[in-house]
Length: 299
Image (cartoon, rainbow, N blue to C red):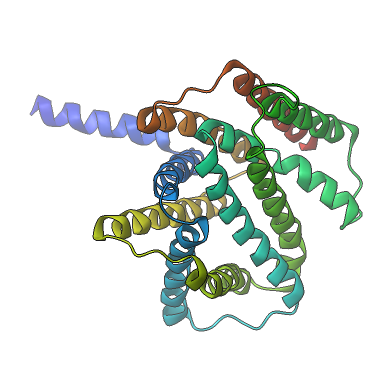
């Protein structure tokens, strides 16, 4: 009897602890899923082209889209098809370039450089959307770029030109985010998701015959696993931002835990530990992003 009461009390305590924090926990889970997907992609990239690995991710997204369409019907045609296609190409480019970066760099370094995307979004918002940006966000951009230079260490022995794959991934993702602002104003969420999945899937399917290598059963399973984890992470983020308690200012900083997961899983899987320069640059990038985010909060 006492044991049952104790178990019930423990469950109630856990429920009280979680209540109101579901969105944060979903984002934390998403960052872990992204890191787990990336470590499998890095392993596969030792044998297979990044395009082939990315194709599996977009196959999973297209299958999910097909299921949604069967249940809810086809999404409406786009009123901003050019923005949608550019967004889809940007998202696909970000995925392909990140896998290329993971192939050639340690996980922590490749992941850290991708987090300059908020600064690149700021630059593109000024250039494309003609937005006004407060001074604090420009300081965040400058700090993030300084962090990139610390990690890149140009002119020093540790300089790795493969880091530009990570920067290219960040630039592609930033482009996709800016195009998202245009696309979601004109189209429904279902239409936007359809373009995201199908643009990448079609482009990668066209390229796949030129890079395809035959896979063993185990390698197919791993490819499906990296795709499933990647898709689950995106679904977790979508659910997190739909929670009633969700606030961007609370959830955005959680994305930086991806760095911690990537470092830990990278060490367990490959025995790699980031050096002091990578850690220092990562701290600069994260601190700059958080400072810029704080500046965006309403007083």
